[in-house]
Image (tube, rainbow, N blue to C red):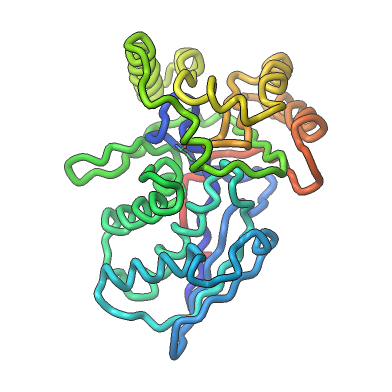
Length: 308
Ligand code: HSE
């Protein structure tokens, strides 16, 4: 038997649309991620449990876990007979890398169960492809951090899919899921097909400066350039409470605030636990739209996907 946990993640982190992401873990020990268990079986079998299992399609062939298994079998050219149990802890369409949690935990678990026929790069490649099939286009900014942990910059050149970036250890990451759903596909389709030259130059400057600031540990510079001029101005229309909330939590003391992945979750960064608690309290009261929503104060999950 093998049991794998893959953590939630924040894609984009404002400045790195599709190419920057972090894996997160709540400081109170909550397992914010999916768990896949694999057992021996005479034929393929899938069981789905967990708080958010009700959101998944009843048809097994539409399930991500089935797709992951199918893709893996095709890749290694062998039919693997296993029983897979998914514990779906993550809400889908939340902007917290829910599909990545399922993709990463299932492919990682199958690979270990089969005694690692695929190396890290091959496995990550498969994860990105599957994410692409589900959301409409390949992006690694959720699967890479969920699999590898920490902050990941997507390179996808010369056999390097992703690179670990140094992070500011004092930063606390607050995430708030309002309890509603935004489809990644839709959230991507509303973005412009083309951007103006001045946006392109600014965006290059911000991302390059953020990576530089991370390597040289210049916290103020990192925060200053952590801006989203690519997606937030358009996606804000899908998130009714975002603008007001951003203003308010910055007043409370957040260093930065943005849309987590394609939304509707919001993330904020601060470097003080008391401020983080105040932000959490405010978001709980004002950003959530129903009882299902949640707010967590998180650290980065350095380990990524792992055996539990
Ligand atoms: N980079 C992706 C997007 C993340 O913003 O569409 C999706 O969670």
